[in-house]
Image 1 (tube, rainbow, N blue to C red):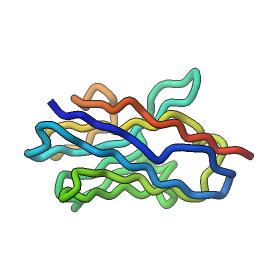
Image 2: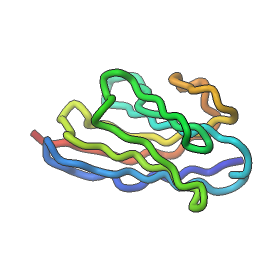
Image 3: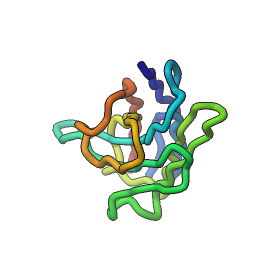
Length: 124
């Protein structure tokens, strides 16, 4: 089992930046691809970013490229999501997720483990 705990959410003004963290614990040995998803009220959970276990590849939806950056520090078992130029439509609960293997996953069903989420609110 892998436990994931997100942190770093909060209230930020439009145009601002925020960095989310996801700390992993438990059976963290092995090659886990890590991802971030978000879910706004009344909407489905959507893919935000993913990173391979060694950080050599990252994946983003076209709509978020250039504003969001995913990174990881395996020594600390932590994944980060740096968000910049935030917009009100970025308001959502942000979830960290993990899956075994290297293939990028952009769908929620492809991930085995999930955190509880952290709220990000962007005011206009």
